Image (cartoon, rainbow, N blue to C red):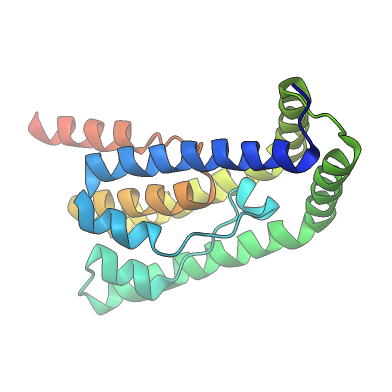
Length: 195
């Protein structure tokens, strides 16, 4: 079966969207119900190379609202921590702009050069892209951990679990393959308190 380039990428796009839809549905079954699902799917995010690397900026006002922080001193600390995180992410994004351009060019070259694309070409391209973005993903994950440690010192246990759920949801919006290790942390904390 010979597929044209357009048909191949249409099929890849449909497969990607099917996987993304399934992950959103699974998330909503576990955390949010039907209303949350409708709100999340109403405005789809644009897919970019930066999203593949997990580049994500937080709005501290939204975080304060989601986590339900009332204390003004806590609000200030959260605002400073998120601003510091956003600045570091901007630095990472700026410093690695050449890598993002290289990945974009690579994707464009692959789409132009593949006359009869097959699954192996798609897998090789995906592995190459992941290899190029791996150092950036590691830096972003490190900044995320630093932010989490800063906020954990300020938040109550309930606020911290709300933050971790919110953070995981935001990361999955830009990087659907993200798997959070945060659930282990909260279970360990609860276990300590029960003793």
